[in-house]
Amino acid sequence: MEENIVNEIRIERLSRVHGFRAVAVWINRLMVRLGKYLYDHDYLSEIAETDALTGLFNRNFFERWGEVISSQAKRSGASLAIVMVDIDNLKVTNDSDGHLAGDKMIKVVAKEFLSKARKSDVVIRLGGDEFLLLLWKCSYENAVVLMDKHLTCIEKKGYVFSYGVAMREDKKRIADVLDLADERMYEMKVRNKKKKRGRV
Image 1 (cartoon, rainbow, N blue to C red):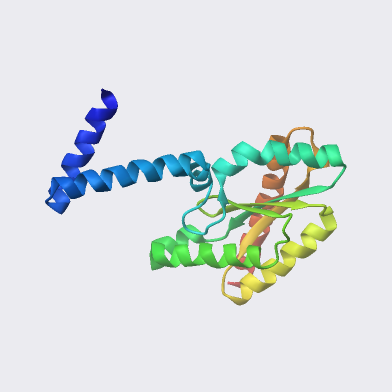
Image 2: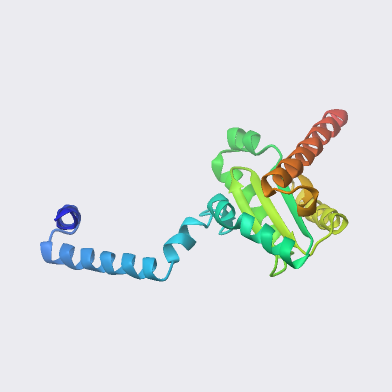
């Protein structure tokens, strides 16, 4: 009964837009079938785990799969470098040049990370100016070299980011590894601010 009421409400709303009830009924049936198809093929969870702006995985993905990835690395004995990234001055850009300029900055950084990502790497936009990289079979030293390459490319485009690397082996819980990477990222952000003040 409740489903029929929902359908009637949808049809009524569609009728107002399209003018014909028959068209509204057809569109509603199509929407219901599409929804069922997406649900049956697990596309809804894929949509829910994808960042709309960049096409990267999002925070929902990490919350669902982060511990699984970490456990797989532990079981296989593979090193797993976890990198926290924060774009410097995104808020300043949003406030001074508008959110379209800020969105462009985010997309440029995302594209740079993807350009050098291996199939085993996972690039996630946590939200706002924060990114997370999970680098499979990557040592701490190699992760730093990779991130410095990313940073050099991004600086050529007029942007800057701060990052911190921690290894899954550093802590037992992935949440603690994230905290360590976040601390190291913040330390770099402080250094970047000092450098900028020194140039002024």
